[in-house]
Length: 249
Ligand code: AMP
Image (cartoon, rainbow, N blue to C red; front, side, top):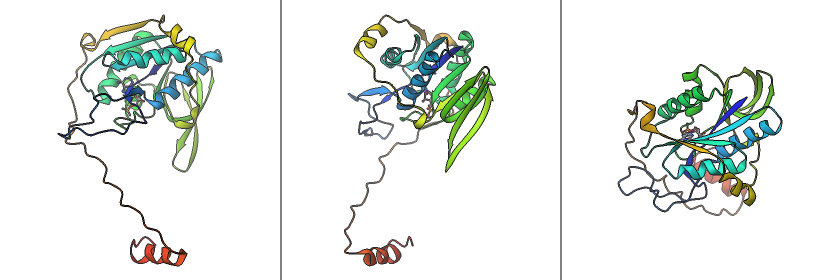
């Protein structure tokens, strides 16, 4: 069973982002970039499937600029077998990413496609679902536990206020939630070994995919600044302020 894991290069989650002066987006100059944290969880789960003898090969795929190769290398150092890099320098929306991945999935003939539940830069939470629709595959989203028996996959899904257990058939697109696993630490020997693993490069223009956009960003702004808090003397004062000033009780 071949497994594809989709890994996106995003601004590191510890970086305090800056908005460009013209409000057209986030300023990426000299900003530390890393693998999307939910994609690290996806890579880890794929590796655990291989270690359990349920996956034969793990292929890490990234679509992005030349530096996205570093993200693929991280997946290879964690334990993925090989990588595919679709080189692209322009910003593209989730439906286009899903179309690109569809063409790769069809060539590789994979059975499971792992995605993060969302990319922390655009927070779209769309790409995995769109790929499953384009391929006509099952989908299991926000997954925090996976059990595979032959062509049946049982998963727990994190839903509002609880967990939902569903069973789907392969082939399947799975999007990973935070509690699925804790990604492994990448060791130095594995980083060195990863340098020898293959990354196939494809130019986006060679795939013949329509890149026309369905959405336009009007502006990006900082969230409003939080007002500073106040100290109250006792519970009675707190209740009075909540009732009479904040009017929330
Ligand atoms: P999104 O729908 O943008 O929130 O992204 C959801 C997931 O789709 C991410 O966690 C990745 O697994 C995958 N994904 C999105 N964009 C890319 C990309 N450019 N390259 C590789 N994977 C991507």
